[in-house]
Image (cartoon, rainbow, N blue to C red):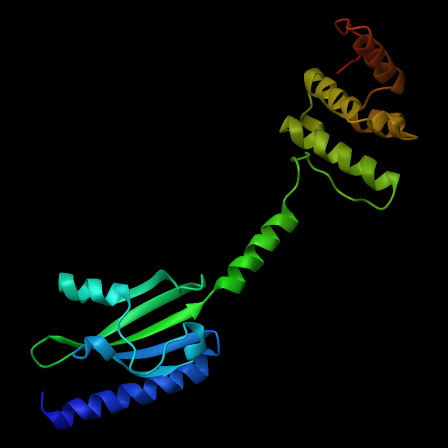
Length: 220
């Protein structure tokens, strides 16, 4: 690569460095390295406040490691950290001469420390002490009862016109366990749905309270 072509490429990459810095904002550093100058490789940098580096500074430890391993492959979306503890999301693209030798690197380092703190805050804000099954904040007792009945029906895996005697018992048991029959007029509503009398429901609930096996008071 001729000196003229070399200068043209690095001039272009320098302009790209500053343009990308303006585009991506103050939390994203864009830095151009001349890999032929390992002791002072940085030749252009935008938003240097992200890492505190400046033109004339050296390669980071990753860059030095790449020199030792001669493994100059483009890398995307990897994590790095500054000496002050900032967490960065980084990528590096290598520039090669006509022989394929890496002579430069354009690197982007986005400070995601604030985003990680925000994610932790959101996780803590959404955390609950324990899961409670199907809790909803309804407007009135009719809504609560309707939702409980809907849940009870769904728990059987059938529609009411397909209910067997066992399905009806399962619905009553489900509603009883969740306090549905404490709601006024719940007996009438459930009895109408199941096609039985409310006295059959009373009998079944009495059997439950005495731990007896239900008799034939509940008819299919």
